[in-house]
Each structure stands twice: as structure tokens, then as C-alpha cells.
Length: 94
Image 1 (cartoon, rainbow, N blue to C red):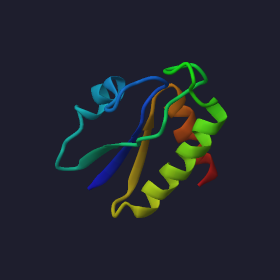
Image 2 (cartoon, helix red, strand yellow):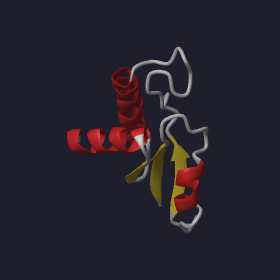
Image 3 (cartoon, rainbow, N blue to C red):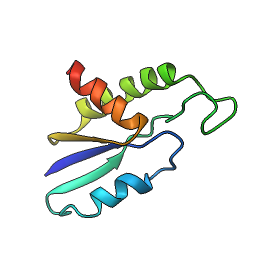
Image 4 (cartoon, one colour):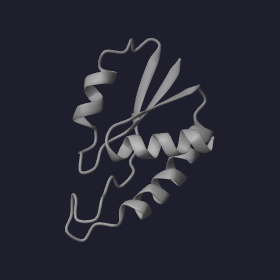
């Protein structure tokens, strides 16, 4: 079993419609998809009083590292838009 951690794009709902188009094609006997509940904000998107992108990434980083550490299976990161930046930054760090 492999875990796919989905890092959705800026302003996308949970679950991500964009990433669901990828994960729905995966064999559920081999993969399980989990959405990373990071804020996915970039200033005023999706809320006028939203946090800065750097702050959202910092919170997302902590959450993603914890989810990777706690997962019993090997992990694959999947990201779209700002979520791709989050996944890429964490991958580079690891």
C-alpha cells in the first residue's frame, strides 16, 4: 500500500476537484489518497482576510511533515498550484 497525500491548490475545496481527477484513476488496492488539510490561502484568496502565502506554506509544512511521519505506509506527494509549491518544498527539504 502507498499513501498519496494530496496538497490542494489555492482556494480549492476539500477534497480537491483537480487532484481527485488523478487519484480516482489509482488502484484502491494499492493506493490510498488523503487530503492534506492545509489552509491553501494566498492573501485574499479564497478569503479577503486570508493569511499570506508564506504563512500558509509554513503551517502546511508542519502539517505535511507530521502526516508523513505518522503514516504507516510509504508516501507519495501530489500537489496542484500552491499545493505543488508546498509538496515541492517539503520534498526538497526531506
